[in-house]
Image (cartoon, rainbow, N blue to C red; front, side, top):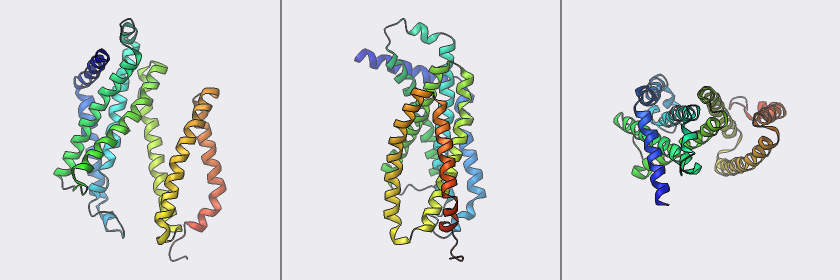
Length: 269
């Protein structure tokens, strides 16, 4: 056990040092999300005047965005290096040693997690320096770091799978636009669905309906994971995306007429 922990720490340190030796892989994930946040915070400042907006600072409202972007950028960079290890035969040589495959994977993920947490601390410090107040205190800040770690591990797991599956740095780099498109879709869909639900549900039932929606959403994630695993095993990974595409299109067609009834304006009602 002690040897496995030492091997994991060594591989994790190697992943961190390898990233630190490439300034572009360090500076870009730190600076780009913050620059984008600054532009959005300056241009969308007037949104805080909308009735019911949760805060008077758009910077505080959008501070979570750099966490996701930074985790994504760090994941792509780290997994590209992981795929390069496969291309150069480093993993094959390492397989001849007593290092277990699980130790190798955990070490890679541990190094990436360290990088993601460093980025998260940087984003948090910059946000606080520019006036963001964490109402939940130190506990809330620590929870943000935990969430950043969970997001980074989720992206990294998929990236490691792609690296092991293809052994190609180009394939892993191609994950970035895929993640970007799916992330944009999730943002747009989440905003739209929440808006429709809040306009259709009376105020005194918002909490109950929101709770039921959350339970159904997470329950759907569990069921969807099982269905996706079965489809991927039997018909290949691409069948999962086709299933999601056809299912989403079918739901839109079935609910299209209902949307005109529930997504009404106050004046029209």
